[in-house]
Each structure stands twice: as C-alpha cells, then as structure tokens.
Image 1 (cartoon, rainbow, N blue to C red):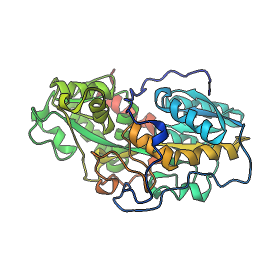
Image 2: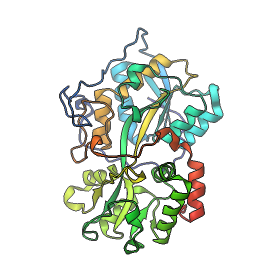
Image 3: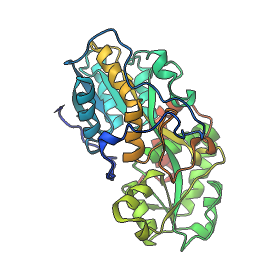
Image 4: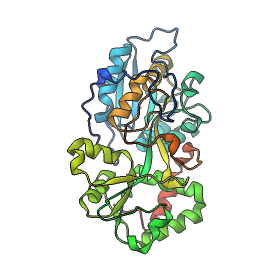
Length: 364
C-alpha cells in the first residue's frame, strides 16, 4: 500500500486497538444480532462485477486516519487484489481539495469521517451514483438521497459524565443550561463532531433557537478542550463533571486502561434533538474516476461483514448493515431517537462557525 502526501489534520482521532485479529472479524454468522435487534442475512462480501480488477490501483482520499485504516486497506488488497494509494487528511480539507481539483482529481474514492463533508462534495457534482445493491444495503437515513454516498459506520453524540459528581445526568440538552452545571461541562470547540452537532442544532431548532441554546451554554461557562479524548479524560479524573463527545471515546479508554480504572459513563440523549445526533463516516466514488469498477470493489468491501466487523471491533462504532454484531455495551440504533435531519445538510459548517464565534464558543 502506497501513501501519498499527507494533509495535516486538526481533528485526528486517537484510536485504541483491540486484540481482535483481522483474520477473525468476518466470523459473524447470518443469524447474528444486527443493529436493530432483528435477524437478517449479512450483505455480500463479493462484488458483483463482470470486470476483472485484480492488479489495478485506486487512489483514496481518506478523512479516516492512517492508524485506523492501514490494516483494513492492507487486508482489502490481500483479499481482492486491488491495490490502494492513500492520501490521509482532515475530511473537510480533503473535501476542499476535491472542490479545487474538480474533474482533474487523481482520487477514485472519497472516504469521509463526516457526512457534512460528503454533502459538500456531492453538492459540487463530484460523486457518481452508486449501484442500488450498495445503497440498499444501508438504512435510508444513513445514505445520500441521490445515491452519491453511503455510510460505512455510525457514531452517536453522548453526554459523558462522572457518576461520583453527577448522581443523575441531565435528561436533555436544555437541562445542561441549569446554573448548577456552571463551569462543569466540557466540550471541544474546534472538533468536527462538535461543530456537526451544532449544525444539527441549527437544522432542528433554527438559527434563533440554536443561538438561544448556545448563548445559554456560554453563560454556564463550559470548559473548552482541544480534543474529545481530553474532555473524556477530564471527566474521568473528576476535573469536570460531564462533557459532550461521541460515544466511542469512553470505550477506547476502557480498552486502553481497563474497565476498573474508568469511572466515567455515557448518557445517551434520546429525545430526537441534536444531542442524540447519529453522524456517520461514509464513502463515495468520484465521478471523474477512470477506475470506478475497482473503486466499487472497495465500497462493497467496506460494507461487507468483514469490513463492518472491523469498524465495530476497532472503533466501537455502529455497523451499518444487518447481521454484524455491534459492541456489546452500546444500545441498538433502533433504541436511539436521532433528529430527523438529512445528514448531507451538515455541510453548512461555515455558518455554524460564524454562530459559534458570535456567541463566544469558538475557542482553542
């Protein structure tokens, strides 16, 4: 696997590694419990293609980190014979690069950490329409309405809290504005997942409603940290009482230092508001690609039992296809109540950043 020049990332995730051999991750049976709690046949692992693509090389612009993806890309090449060259970087920066390159881009695949960045590339007309067998493998709310991209894994927003400091966590976003939590809430203002959450807040409550909530939060003097992992650690140590992050950060810490050393717990908002947002990582094929058949082999591989089990076991994220066992501590996706937003609309980050700056929450 050849690496291209790396783009710097302000929001790279530190991914904990499970002792789960890659060769074992496809061992889920067709009767395994899926993300909705039902039983279903898993998606096919082989690409239905009449074209022999073994030996071809595709170029991937990956907003998912090298630490996470390198092993899976290597296994993909072993299993399919398709070679990859990867340019790693921040999803937003890679999206901006694609917009600049247009149909002259060397990329065949855009693999984003965030639905908003996928939406921006889609809006520019740079993604091709994926085959129905690919898009139909994933629930409608986790794929492009036009078929331009599809989710490969999901992550839920949560309130991580220290039960030694918080007996009963706030039930809703609005409860976080209670003065009793002044100076006790952590967040990562420059992180893409926080800004996607605020974007979802704008979409669900409108600009004025989002401004009102953010102004109330600012009045409670939340503590800004550089990264979500630092927020989590501050909660676990008791430095702060709670923090707004993604669900998997807690499980990374448990995997790293052991459950007996982790005090913090996750609280899942389930009221249909932005606090219960389920965002995704996803993938699309560039319309300008001259190797779309080989690129689709990768897309199908990411949605295979092997690929999906890798994400479920490596990052504790939600798998997107039936028949794949999710991490045992997670509530099923069907039990959550995410807001009714088109995830592609999370692309309006510039407006979100302007609003955060206006209310004084765009720091660090």
